[in-house]
Length: 189
Image 1 (cartoon, rainbow, N blue to C red):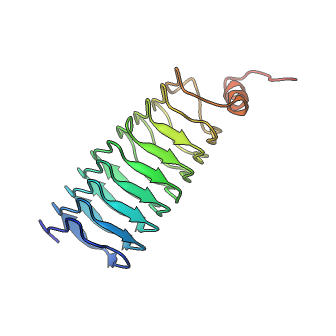
Image 2 (spheres, rainbow, N blue to C red):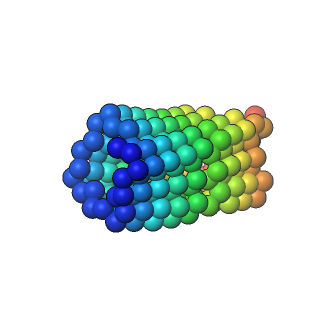
């Protein structure tokens, strides 16, 4: 699929497997229950699109723009993001486990109530973003920056404060114990 205009298209119920989308305009596309499996998206514009209960399983996104896109209850398991723009991306609920977001600029993104188990955020810049109630267990986080990020309610068991930037991050009291333990401190009552 090359240079197609899917602006404002209703993707509800569509199923695509092993399709390559190149320079497709999906600006303001909407839909519930769309399924993309093993697809490649190159230079696709997802600007202001809204995806509800959709699946993007084992998909690859290269140089895609997700400006102001919303993903609610979506399954984005095993997806790879390379050189994508994530400004004002909003993710609520769903499963982004094993997603590869290495080096991604997520400073203006918001993730809430999302499962991101074993996601790769190596070198990602999440400074100032919102990661509230996110399951980051087993995530790869070496060199990630979470300075000023709201992390309240998230699973921080994979965090190693010695290998990442956390200055000014907002956490809750229980998370402070997890981080202190990760630093080798013996926390006692």
